[in-house]
Image (tube, rainbow, N blue to C red):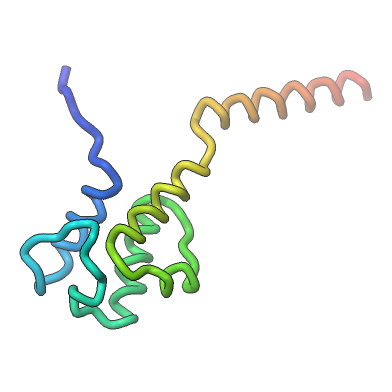
Length: 107
């Protein structure tokens, strides 16, 4: 069995920035985004790519508010924490199915 450790949001974000920016050799969460020398279009593209990776929606207004890499990381972590777990989704489906079956029996 392979022991794989799931990368953190911070690691994924920092690695993505390193892979897509040629301006810096190292990245840490406290780094201001303007130090990366990216314009607003590149910033939007970067954040949208990360949103797609994590399967979350990030509004243009939220993107404008990001000043540091930590801002991006914190926002992604908050969005992910707000999503229901697989167990919660399964419980919702079970409850919906039970309600449907109950309604079908009453008809």
